Image (cartoon, rainbow, N blue to C red):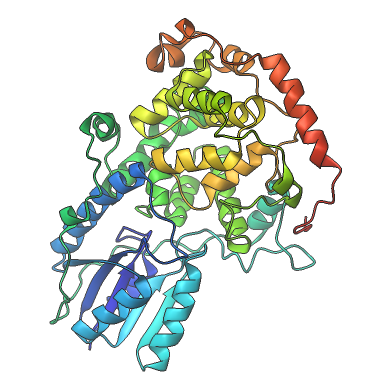
Length: 455
């Protein structure tokens, strides 16, 4: 009687609590990944994420094969696929690392079903630094302000040390049938789109560990000074690996602390990711519903209106006439990523200068970012739009000209991604659209806030 390990957004072997627990089974393990895009709780992946998933699964399959265990791939509703795989291999136990979004409803139902049928089902903490049920205000509620949240995290016991990669694994004698990864058609059919993404990124656990060490050795000391400048190569480039769980936040935390470098600012960014996930834990509809309920009635432009549709198209394709905006959107399309400072600027431009609903921008990032996850992507869009947790004040409108002067004065970033941007006419007047945005925000700022009021 074997143990089935259900992989999800944790495509690694190191610090994998569910795998480590299963490795103790003398009857061996079955390693299963389920592509679930049909359950109501599962949000279908965007194009860039599908590209990354294909290659990350390939790397995980190679790592498991080196230890003598195949990776079983199945597609469909997890609540149906997992029991079917158990029936095929005769596993007596299932282990997995916990999820913290809407998918945890799938997990809870499946755990209850399996246990009722006599199959062991155990879940483990693994994707976050701190369990969302343990970081609470003095009144027992969730935090809405990041600084208070992060102070509470730092005051809590330090994250547990990461678990080592299992030295060996036993392969269960009976393995379920597996899909062929290529049959899933995760890779884009337009090679001109994915070509530069492939040049930019190497998915997989091994490369994630290399990027972490490179950051700590070569970039960490300059991170605090250069992190806001998009042409500076000081960031860790670990966000897509964190999104797919190719590296755990605990591994990053402990390696960073042990490095001796000045990593306080870097760890606070890891804390911001944590804040997003703790918020999603309480608000699983984060990508569709504003945390500040006043914004449910915000007067966004009709995206189907010809003028708004033209502006949206110009934003998506990097033809707004504002060089920093255009460079960011071109970088996104061609490389699957965008510098964080520029992300804030392009999001502010869409929601405030164009008055286009933040959910439209969030959906575009969901489709084009290799690191778009269910928490950080909508959480950050809501923050810029002014309707989220610890949100930027509604009157804060990032001026793309000023931002370029401050953070790309020499034009290195713009020259790399959109050198011809000045040839495009500016699609809006920044002053006029700022005034329009503030007037629109005035219509909701005095309405009852609603929602969770915890600090």
